[in-house]
Length: 90
Image (tube, rainbow, N blue to C red; front, side, top):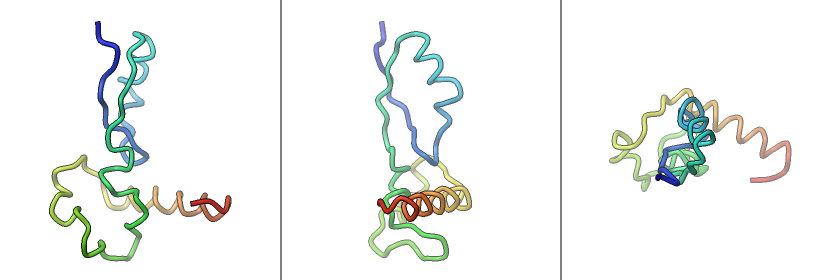
């Protein structure tokens, strides 16, 4: 019997919520989440209208990770920045 599975899940990759999360809940199977920071995209270093940081690993590995459309990424980052500003948290 399986007790857990490893799944990609982050604010920019939420497909897990549609089928696997309900199935896991129903069957009592836990989840071990990998890349909750969206393959490094949610670390706070990527901003709308700014180039990737010079030392970002995404320059050479962006195609290897889960795909994220730029506009979707920027909408999530903008929302996170708004919540951080509103709450005074980072």
